[in-house]
Image (cartoon, rainbow, N blue to C red; front, side, top):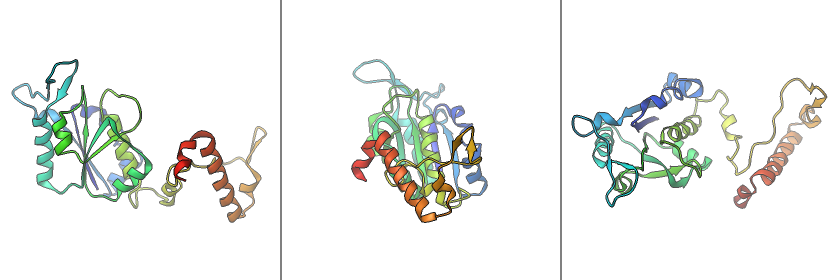
Length: 226
């Protein structure tokens, strides 16, 4: 899979993709991430990428020409299965979206800035719009990094233990159960006996019950689709 990210601040994306699982995926040749500086497609000698909004109002708007020029150049070089835009008014991004996107081929992600991007780009070039929460960030770069991470970790061969992703929170509309490691007794706080029993069926049932109870307590909204 290849993910191309369009941004006016490429520096913000230098860290997230050069460490840990995402770097491992790139080293294995399982995923490519390319960051494109939108100003390289800017208008005029000042490489302008934004302008005042029609109708007045505070805040600048990212223009059509630079964005579409970058998108269409990328699309002329290879096939893309989606053009994603990170926006507060997009669909709430969930694990099911990550699962679906991980099954696609190449993706383009647009990082918004200022007051947003010209609506015509959203209407005619963007295929998926997502929000990672009911809050506003200064730009779409951090959201793009979150989306890319959530997708790439699901690709076959990226995680050392691929079953790990299948037991993550939200995969079955439940939060993950509590987990424990050594020592068995830490300052009088003990690991639940069931986890030391060796009875795999009983342990699995315990984990399912714990996941259900944790979800019921912390995210009862998830149980509506359970």
